[in-house]
Amino acid sequence: MGLRDFARTVDNLYVARHAGRRPRKTLVVIVGNGTHRIANILNDRDVEIEAKKRGYRPGSKKFREFRWRLFEYARYFTSYGLPTLAHVAVYQLVADEVCRDVVTTNYDLILDAVWAKYPELGVAQNPTLRAGQYDWEKYYSPSSLAHRRPRYWKIHGSLSHIIFVGKRNPERYQVHRLPRFPISTNQPDLAAYYKMSTLAPFLGYESQDNPLTAIAHPRELHPAFQPFIDWTLGNVRKPFEQEISMVRRLLRDVDRIAGVLILGWRGGYDSSNPKDPWNEELVPSMMDIIDKRSVPIMMAVHREQFAQRHLSSSELLRRMKSLDCCFVYSRVQQFVTALFHDCCRHFPFPKLTRTHEIWANNWFLPMKERFHA
Image 1 (cartoon, rainbow, N blue to C red):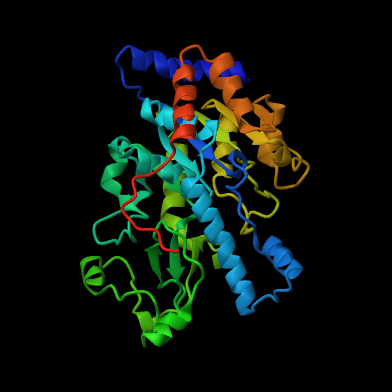
Image 2 (cartoon, rainbow, N blue to C red):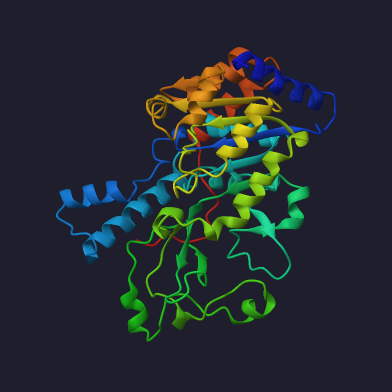
């Protein structure tokens, strides 16, 4: 299946919508870090290299502050930076009700900012919670919303939240949302000054109201927090187990999927080492769909991602290329134009470009919080 074949899948959904029908099958869009240059934050090795250039010894206070600033830069710019044309396309697909599930392994807040700008879409983030589970300040949504709203799955964590990890039991932790304005550094000395064992509050009544969530007491937690993302937790994915398993389940339900669009995601997975902690959990589901040819799939990757096709972890990328289902771009706008303008006949491309122009001239969020220098 090539680009024009996938375009027909998109067009069929729009034809149904124009006829006043809500499609029984909808698109699943998987978004990776190849969609925006600031969406991909540095990993531990890169941080150590950059810190060494500045004379910061790993483990030192200056090193920890430097690493935290990198996260804050990424959080700030992806909250307020202009989304790309690809992000506008994802928004348009969701707004037009031809895409129900947007999945990302990214930590950035670009799409989070889009959903916040359009609350009328009613996008539910990680709708996995049952009664008796705490939502950790809106990181999760009730599972009851999963059947009625568009769904946004962040399956490896987010820069929107931080985690206090348990001292003896890492599985007992607290997750909290950061304010939108930037925080200069993580300062556990503030906790000591105010004679608190941690900056995290004790969730007393929340603990009583949500008995299925293990909420740790502050004295059980390390006083310093860190971003709620997989690689600051040693790439442990257990805290994200619920959302990962839900996405794998929806990918198996092919009777409800019209097509899968992969944007800027190589899908690294080493099948010779299935226990590799860096493996992307969704890849086996993708390979199963390809093998059974049950759902149309289209992949678009950045040329730097495509350059990694020789790696043992790039089997999905190689398979997609062999099936002529892989588009390589140097700017993601090239793919968006090729699919939605050049090949699609019913996608509202003029509306997409107008929206992006409006965003470029006036991209902001309603501010309910004050900025602090």
